[in-house]
Amino acid sequence: MNPAPIRWRLTDLQPRKGDLRADALEGLSARPRTLPSKYFYDATGSRLFEQITRQPEYYPTRIETAMLQQHAPAIARAIGPDVHLVEYGSGSGRKTELLLEGLDGVVAYTPVEISREALLASVERLARRFPAVEMLPVCADFTTAVPLPEPARPARSRLLFFPGSTLGNFERAEAVGLLQSMRATMGAGGAALVGIDLDKDPAVIEAAYNDAAGVTAAFTLNLLHRLNRELGADFDVGGFQHRARYCTRRRRIETDLVSLREQHASIAGQRFDFAQGEAIRVEYSHKYTDADFAAMCAEAGLRVAQAWNDADDWFGLRLLRA
Ligand code: AVJ
Image (cartoon, rainbow, N blue to C red):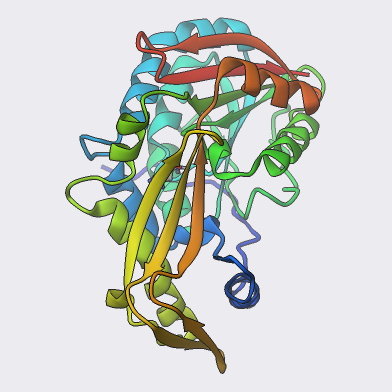
């Protein structure tokens, strides 16, 4: 059998090595020290994240996938036909399949993903599965304004899909800024479908970020391996430990890499000294209440047009409109 002709056009705006270097030097020089969580997602990190989503403790992916399956008809009715589907942080694109199946005549699909390997692998698979959909992938960091490619056949509206509670990785002011830029990208008549992890028993949340198999720990520590691989840094990765704790007051998981002893590491000729117990903050995963999420949307000029939660109120899907 002949493979289907692959007709798709990549817009490559992948961050350069210089960005990683500058961001790492800046973050590690700050107090407290930080590293941006977007750098988790190199090829290895994207694979490890896929493995996280299959861990029994990591509930968000399983619940959200089931919800998309269940509510696809209602989402399709709300959105209408001939849409340009745009997705931020598309990763493997598994959840996208459910939307591409459920929506009524998707004109084009634009995944925006920082990992080129994950992006190309998912587009190749989806292009075969959905030959009628024009694939217009963009390799980029979606936190900076992304120029959207125009489909050959014009769409009636845009739907921005932002699943996985990835919004939760941003601090509140950044999240509001991102929602604002999503509002601009959606355009008149457009909508956004956002997945949000809801506030719940801290024990459930902490278990999800400290799986027994240690996959999340490997995912976090990969950040140091990446600095070694790509910047020639000399971190002794075994000298650091993954730590993820839920801060109830701020409703967020705070993930650190903790130095197990006094040690130093060099990146690009710059030396960094770490005290025993000193932490590098590498990720936030905010959890939301209905009220605080709606308030953030309102600040960004968006309203919650429709809302779905699972039976336990652990995870939510929100359809946003300007
Ligand atoms: C990709 C943002 C959905 O914050 O839950 C999973 C990333 N980090 N385990 C999340 C992650 C550690 C994940 N998101």
